[in-house]
Figure (spheres, one colour):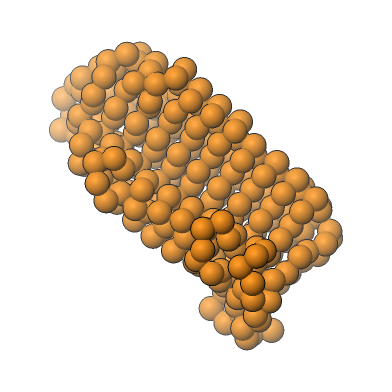
Length: 261
């Protein structure tokens, strides 16, 4: 029912936790020592239509999903956490949520979530994938995150497609997408624009992402920084640093040929 519920919740399997709407039903933490909502080794659970508020403290999670299956989070607003959603060894569906005012919007550790049509805004880092994660990140708006939009490291790959990744960062060390440490996602069909620092930064250490059919323009330092061997083809970009990649058929925003990678 509508109202504010001050508590920390540990869910069991086969539970659908349903709010009356995120604008009227709130779960707010009563303790910083555990996640607002905790899901550990359970199955067939869904959470929808809540506002979920944490303490804002580092290490405190709005929703924690550990070694669980068949989990869906939809139409929630998740505010003020160390990580809005923290995922370990799980593959939840995260659909049409707003995740804001946290250190990390979504943190994935060895996980393969479906991250679809969310608004991930005003966090320090939007999405952070690490340790062999392989998420599908599609149709999201990832904006105004102060460190950067999406970070893949330590053999994390997956698909990044059809997202708006714009207006992230506050200085030249920031980025729209950062790829490092043996990570090679497919990055396709995104609008990666007006970020501080780099639009896409492919760092060293055995990274070979496929980067195609993106618009990567208006980023303050370079649209693309190439430190390894990505395949960069059929994109629109104006500036690039590094030429160790491969690819062709890239153009500038004025339609003239872009510098090849």
